Image 1 (cartoon, rainbow, N blue to C red):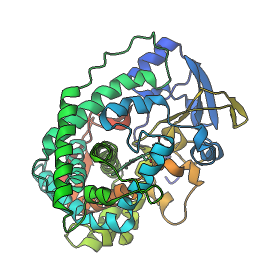
Image 2: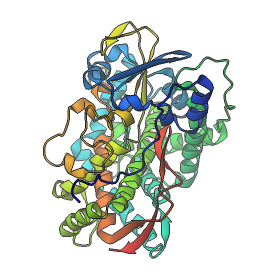
Image 3: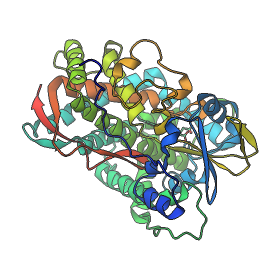
Amino acid sequence: MSDMPHPTPPQVPLVTEAWGVLRSLAAARRNILELIPEIALRQPIVSGKMGRPWHMVMDPAALRRILLEEVENYPKSDVTKNILRPAIGESLFVAEGAHWRWQRRAAAPVFTHRNIANLAPIMSAATDRSCARIKAQLGRGADLYQEMMTAAFEVISDVTFSGDEQFDRAAVHRAVDGYIDQSAKVSLFDLFALPGWIPRPSRMLSSGAMKQMKQMSDSVIDARRDKGPGDIPDLLDLLLAGEDPKTKRAMNTAELRDNLLTFIVAGHETTALTLSWALYLCAFDQGVQDKLRMEAQGVLQGRAAGADDIPDLPYTRAVIDETLRLYPPAAFLSRTAQKPDTLCERQIRKGDTVTLPIYALHRSHLLWEEPHRFNPDRFLGEAPVDRYAYLPFGDGPRICIGASFAIQEAVIMLATILSRFRFTRVAGKDPKPVLILTLRPEGGVWLNVEEA
Ligand code: HEM
């Protein structure tokens, strides 16, 4: 039986024929990933035209050029920025040039290994609360996607505005999720820089909730500035203490708020998605689940994982890495070329849209063996592929500033949860990967919960 193909977890049906604009638009409305042609899994670059010329790049050397060597020539496309700006201003995620550089330098110390390790007890405590909620679902099917969204939001709000009574966690969660949902729908049409005359859904941005959230954050920040840092500095304390070592510039209240809200927006859903897909994949492959549980139970002996346990949980880490390969939360990045260039021997003109379909890169037959198969072992030991063949956090100067934070949180939660519970799939409820700003499991991640 050993030469039987391995079953593979759900994937996106990619386009195998030339599509007309209208059909492509209909697909984009449903799921951006369905715009990726199947040949993107077998070629280094695919180009086309929809309004403007676009190029999808899946070649490691060309990706290195876009993200590192020629990064100034490939700023983030306006699309991403236009979606996010109303929520998070000219913050780290959105800014370019000098305004980005000083903020990145001021924020870098916030995410040192030591500062992140200090925040681990907050992650462990949130995990214990999550386990208590999961326990209440024993013996039935539960939507672990909803649960992971709740847990990850608790972590990010506790490490940004810890212990601030004026901070209304539920209100912020509602405002952020509502905003992301609405703007994601609008944004689909902009991803390929479609001409303005194509009708778009109305821009019903919930500015009321957004305004309220900003005001609340500002008063929390001002109060904290007067009070001084707590015993364990949280992200707000660290950011308040930060300044750009070159220009000595520190952030004012509005800049602090925009960056903290950026951490919340960029950090909670992405991490929750990683955990949801990881739990699904463990239910999909019981062998992997058993192996992970053995590792976690051996190390943890019933307690929740902390920062010191992470080096002892290499298999859990490999499951997270493999999850981020198959279901990268940021599955599609987009840039606009500022001057002519050549990528994979193809001419790129000024103004062309250059997309980085991370989902297709991670499943390329040119780069990965059995790319659709869930196999965490490929991440044990040495790096399996070229660094630029695996980009869940991007790379170069704009690489995700929260990557180690996210990995630490994901390993702590996954090891602890699987040391306590066993999950199996609910028949007929497998999630479908859909890209709406991030790569989400449509229909949720429904799993049966039993005690481990
Ligand atoms: C698994 C979880 C996460 C994933 C997959 C992820 C992915 C990414 C990616 C791909 C980028 C680069 C985007 C681009 O180049 O166009 C990015 C940037 C960023 N991420 Fe994350 N992220 C995660 C978690 C977090 C967390 C937890 C935080 C903060 C606490 C965070 C904060 C940011 C910020 C501020 C940027 C912009 C950095 C800059 O441009 O200088 N992310 N993230």
